[in-house]
Length: 369
Image (cartoon, helix red, strand yellow):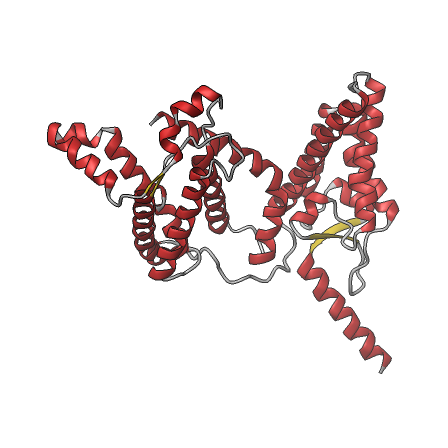
């Protein structure tokens, strides 16, 4: 049981780290596939990601301290257990000398129970998310289980000094049973739960304030992540940290200029990393048909309004500017913020920008005739 608890802790820890690293591309994938950030498909995707990480964590962790003495003591798990239903025989033998409650709480029973339970989510996703049949669920469960057992039986494919988990043929059987149980649950979920893959909706409406706030949040997330990585790289290369106030300001100015002026200026959508993740395009405010990408000076003005206060004056100034930006947006019907107004720009969705280009081209063709 302790090993299962430790593996669970590792799974959640690794999932948190991976979620932090991939949240921007994951959000972009949601918008690309569904035309918006749909709540339930996002939840299903997150659950699948957590389960995938859990499979790795439960296969590998907890890692022991590999010593010669440890490997000698664990020589018994260096072989593979090929006797079918051996674990069930252990449960039967234990039940013969103990009560039902004691048997249900025993390690021999819980080992079998958790081996079945652990593959229930896999079968569930096979049926509910991927719409595969019974045979597909059985083969996938068996294949994944076999990969786990081979990894454990070969001491992580020879990377570990010795095996520390028993490769057991019974695990193949119980895991596959768990996958089939999960598949049956998934069939029921198809009727009771929303579709995890809804039809893509047109994405041409004015971007909502929530979507713009998500873009700002992802911009900030990218800035923090890149800043941390660059600071660590600087420390590793030069053996020193940016301790002086002026040094940190220069560093922050450089990072924000690259992220929110240089890179957007090289992109067709003129969007920073966060707004690009939610598929928004920064355009000049104009009543003419079509869309005109924001110019370089627009990006510099937006940087000066929103990101320069953070780079030079710190988080208090940044929070004040964000609050002022949000207040202006709330007061206007077109949802434009202070940085939008001062830079003569606004955001449209990528689908809307594409549709406007097509309309503008048709107008020009008509005028040419």
